[in-house]
Structures are given as structure tokens and as C-alpha cells.
Length: 442
Figure 1 (tube, one colour):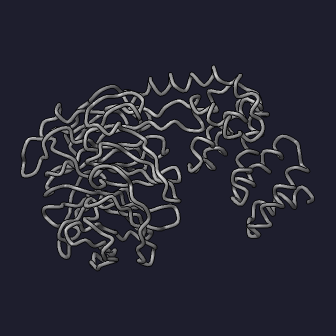
Figure 2 (tube, helix red, strand yellow):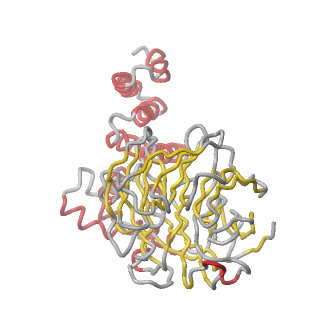
Figure 3 (cartoon, helix red, strand yellow):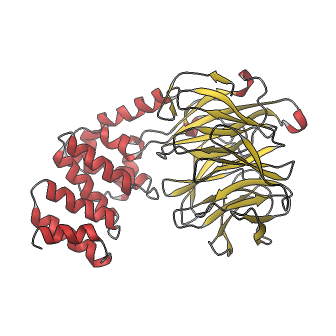
């Protein structure tokens, strides 16, 4: 593979370039904690409105500019593996890889209109070739093999099922195709809801979500192939691709020059881009994007990678310029780590964040942060985080169980027993809660 270092070094799959604005924004929270100290109870709407400005902005930055990389074309799909490597298809012949160390490599070539892609269960890459009508499988070391070359007319987005089967957006045929582990191709779902289905992702319940390039529609498909209209994302033209992260969906608007977050109830908000085509870095909502297409989340879910088509279209080798952008999403951890110690301040900051971003799935993050606080000696703040998380997720067995664990660790057995009992009420097969309860004589 040919490697090229771009920009600055990267850490843990996240480019350092563009991180300074995010850090400065988070640091501003420290100055707001005196305001938040009175918010130990639920925030009223007026209080929530007053405090929204305290939440620092997400940031948008450019990771690399394809104009500096010989042979890079236009924009296909983007995907990220479990180690943080980012795979960028250029809608020509090549897939490029951006490493956690900050290098751009030519990962594999021999495609024909490299479009959508996805990572398989063993870290292999599945890559659509829109123009060629085939799907390739690429090993971790960049060796390409033909996977399917029949039954597809314009494949784009790919999602991988539990057993390694592929679900492919066949844009030209307006169908979603299933490719079995044996490479057998069959129509999974079709119908009038599809208008050049372009991007596809899965949620944490096993349902599929498809965005159309031909209109603004998002289609929900159950695991057994029942399709229904989910929502319409506003903006000029159709949609590019879709990714599931942090309990919701992120959708690129290719002609609208923006990225949206769509909640599981179908509501939406702009995450990045002004709606006017351009190139600028900074706070995500006031920075410009240019025809964003592929999108994928980093393993931690706090960074989105998006490829922008800055100029040209790259079709048939025509001139094109593309960039890889990253959207750094401010997280609950960012906010609470930057908050001065104290239960009132932590409570206020937590509730401010949840008021501003109620659709985000923060349960696992809150548990991890609670243990981080415990190990760092912020015991009172840890208990606040565990308790607020269990309050927010009263039927999530892990959230309630971990609150019990926090009480047990801090020498409060009666409170721990109460939480273990709660867990067993709605999760009677929770073995760990049963063991803890027996050990404490509850």
C-alpha cells in the first residue's frame, strides 16, 4: 500500500487537527458551573432555555484534502472499522484508508464506481461498484476478490446482518437486495417507497433504515422485510448516506450541504453545515460543507467522518476534488469531566445536557464515567452520575444494576439491595443481581 501522512497526528482514531476548538468549548463549561449549581431539581423550560448556550458546540474540521493526494477521485461511501481505520471510496477505482496515526493509504483498487461500503464481522471490507454492478470483498491487508457480480444493477449502500449476510441498496432497480453468506442474491424488499435507495444502516434492534437519493424519504425495514415510511429529512434534493450512532441516525444531505441527526421518533435537527455550499472549519452549525455524501461513526460514537465533494463529479475520470471532514460531537463525558466537582454542579450539567440532547443514548457512557469518577476519588459525583443515569433509564437492567454496584462499593448495602431488587423485578434472569442480593442477605 502507498501511504501518505496528512495534517497532524491522530490519536485513537481521532485526528488532532480540529480538536482544539472542541477542547476550548468544553473548557468554557467550567465557567458556567456556578450558574448550574441551583439546578439539582428538574430544569424548568425557562431554565433549560437559559442554559442551552452553556452547552459547547460540536465542531467541524477537515481531516485531509484529496487535491493533495494523486489519483483521489470523487465521493462514494465511508465506513470505519473497530480499530478506528476510516475507509473512503472515491466513486472511481479506489478505496483509500485513513489510519489512526494520521496517514492516508491507497488500500485497494480495481473497482468500477466505488460507492457504498461496510465492514464485515471479521474486519473485512465489502465494497459496492455502482457502475460495474458488483460487490467486492477486501481482506484486512487489501486483497480484493469478487464477491457478487450477478443480480445487481446499481449497488450503493451496504449493511451487514448478524450472520454475515449483506443488505444492499440497488439504486437503479429501486430495491433492497439480500446477499447470503453463500453469495446467493435475492430481493429483500421493493416498492414505491424507494427512489434510488442510496444509504442503509441498522439500529440496535436489528431494523434497517434506508435513505433515498431521489427524494427526502427515510424508510424503515424490519428484520423480516416489512418496509414503512419513517420520516422525511428536509433540505434541497435527496439524501446521501445514513449512519446509526449514539441512539440515533445521522444523514447527509448531498444537495443541501448539511448533516442531520434523526431521532428514533422521526424528529430531526441539523448537526453540521449552514446549508450554503462552501468550505470552512469551526463550530459545526456555522461552518460550511460541500455536497456531503458518505458518513460513518468512529467506534466511540463521538466523531463522524464525512466525505465532501468540493468540485467536479469524478464520473468517467472527470476532474473532481473531495475532502474528508470530521464532526466532533460534544459528549456527556466532555461536559461532566469539565464541570467542577460537587453534586449540585454535576447534577445541573447532566440535566442541561439531557435537556439539550434528549434522544442520545448515554447509558453506557454514564456508567463508564461513573467508574472513572470513582477511581479518581470523586465519589460523591460518581454516585450522582449513577443515580441520574438509573433515573433516566429506569428499565435498563445495566443502569440500575450499576447504581447498586456503586452503592455496594461505597459501603451502602441497604441501598445496593434496593437496586438489585429493582433489577430482578423487570429482569428476573439477571444472574449478577441475584448473586449480589444473596451475598448481601437481601
